[in-house]
Image 1: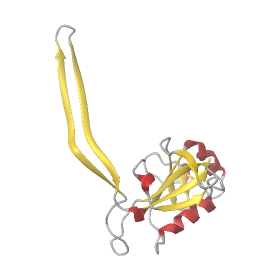
Image 2: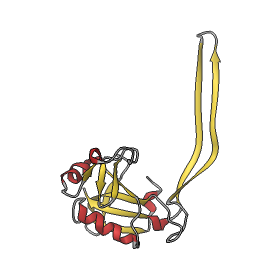
Image 3: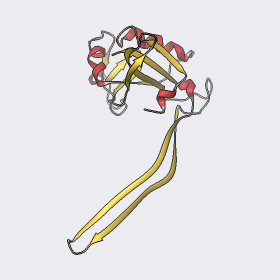
Image 4: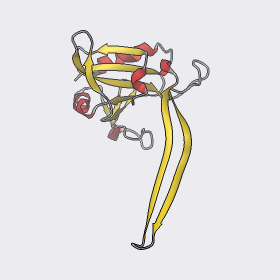
Length: 165
């Protein structure tokens, strides 16, 4: 989520709470000819407002097998995924408390855009599993770690939408 917060396309909807209209206005910043799959990450405190919106399509009304992991529904063609990692901070001239909700394009279409994904994960090391046997207490400790970093590799595929908290 931290990597997405550095997006250069920013929609200022800090005057109002999250809504269908605000999401549509934010999507227009992509300036695309054809629609593509997108996901919007929202804070769980914004979910109630979206569910009450007449344009919200709940995930239980989908056909089987067409969901993103964690998806609760769809609004304005965006898959809605709640995450407590969506930051809340002061934004704008009035320092209004806002949620910074990233909207990310998921698919690539080589005919109309480049193939670089929005996020890239660089691994320093694969998973390393270590074991340590403690014979006196008859236990084995198993630990695993992996080192990686996620970076924003294509800013044209991310819009950071600010909505009033």
